[in-house]
Image 1 (cartoon, rainbow, N blue to C red):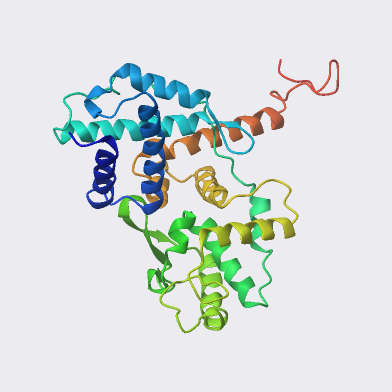
Image 2 (cartoon, rainbow, N blue to C red):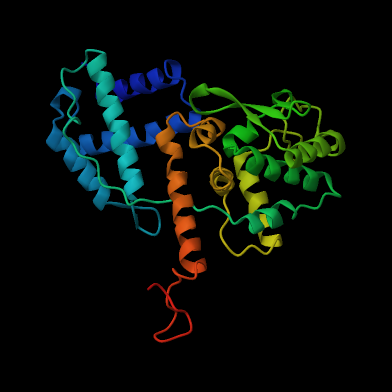
Length: 319
């Protein structure tokens, strides 16, 4: 039997070639399996058929109890669960390939995750953010187009930075997106985003383009394809300039896109298609957000449901 590092390499090659996973996803699998391999090596285990459920449980427990980084921060429950998921996938692959006879992760329970609901940005803050870029400069026009497209089409930042000029059809009001797992989808683009992208293409992109510029839609100052890190920095700058106190993230715009659609009456399966979620269960977390919002509005607004603010105060509260 091949050593564990060789088997892990075969598994990662399978994910890249057979399943077509994105480079960032492959890198995450690689990191998780390296942690697993280091744990097994420390235990003196160098063959896959020597691993039993107790070993996997010990690995999960050690990861949950360990710390990382200069601040000795504990691993988040989500990181532990993700690592266990990578280890499960690895062992299932070994069984399918006939390398091992059993999967030692079958009876290993994953740690319970606290329910974390995505936080949507209030519409007023979104509008202030979108109005923040200075549209008298090429970079301002570019940034406005980026922000409008992130919020107006609900794109992941990796999807946005991968866009080429040919991927957007302003006449039809649509953008062709290559999502996770190489799945392609077409997303409608609203009037504001169309106008912003059109202004960028005609008045800004030509001045940003350079000798080595290819088909990338959004360009940096050197004429190359804009990176996710650059998008994060420009968002932080415009949020600060707009006077938005809350922490705003690129993925927060995607959350807001979904939440605001559902609050406006959109069907959850339509939102699923727009976001490119493989399962509607992933999208349904946003329905929990809107239900909490509706309850909060009800409890603070309806005269027969308002919370008491003080004992014997003017608010009648619930009766």
